[in-house]
Image (cartoon, rainbow over all chains, first blue to last red; front, side, top):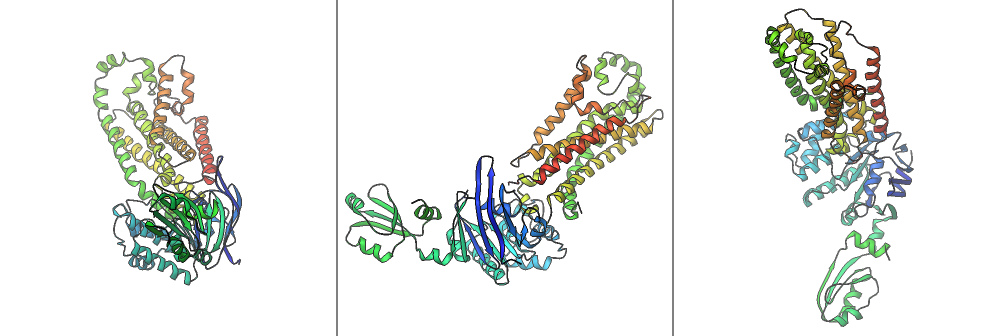
Length: 296
Length: 271
């Protein structure tokens, strides 16, 4: 058996003349938590939907556990769990009925113990009707249905939407535990922070193309910061130069903002002789990182 | 195995309430209509005068070749059956079939269903068999109700074989509309309901059929409508199942179902 649980080669999907993804190639190793990040519309969901055989590729191949995602989809899905970003449920069913219905597809006719174990973990009332559930509780149901057959591979598409921070932390702990037991996890998100928290490696996708596949540690070393400075006067804005800054953007009045990748102490030192009104340093958004690295 | 039992059982539960409502409504309509048969038959001379004012074509499109047909219980049932079972039954069939696959897309439940260890073929055939079972059950219950009503109100015996042929025509017409709805639903790219459009389609077909019957020179237009092929002239001594008509209904239904299957097997599902 191959060491790669997911193997994608030159995968493309076109919607008429519009490109969804183009020549995407990726290898996800057995037992790893792999992050898949990119802004909305970058092609993350298209890639995942091809893996789950919801849409068909225009070109290229994808295999899961050495099985073709189109031809062997039934066998693949027996071993794969999928947590979608936003999916509807059958509103007239109770939570337990829905989860039992999902279980039976895997031949698990008496799966109540596993369902109860997961529901307890997420503090979810199994007897409630799905129509009565809040977005957060529906997300919990979605998470449980993806895990109830203890899959070898778990594919998650923006799974944290609607989860409060406490539940998110619990969910990440659960994913780490399942990963320690051998589950491979393919985690798609547009939030860099949560991918950094969970994943070992990450692929960055933009406009349907994989831009970079790298270790999270090496991404962390880049120490990107978003800096916003409000100067006392306009001259200071125009004279300000510092190494490590990209895409300096002049804002309203005497303000300047940029993504900074250098030493933070150097930035502070360079500002020591200049009169400033305000200084803000924060985590950049993923889009801003893209702008910093890939649009230059 | 082509049918997934888990999905099939779920679909039975999901559609049971709607099926029940349709059964009750059509059974009530048939019962109420048949309850006036005796009054109708007992006042032949008065009604004959009134009916003579109705254009012959208007009677023909209800399968009545002459007024005396209406005086027999089977003729009376057949004339009303056109509306209740053929039109309403076809609306039931096309609404159910146009939604049976598509609802998983526009309700966004396809994300769960199609990511289970189940093939597109299993999903398709589980739902198609459920669809045809629903159409069969609706026809069975309403035809049985019609039969019982006729037995209760009849003045003279009626031909059971002719009644069975009429029921069979109704059933295969409903099955064809089921196949049309299924086919149209597979053509929808981004999941959205097409209920209004398919009901409109049944009514347009019925309108075309009506026009072809009551307008001289427009008879050929009727061949565009499936209603034209479902013979309801049950009181005719030559009334029997026409093998060409049977071939038309079953052939077209199978063809549309086959094309729908091919499309659905390779359809991109968006939610």
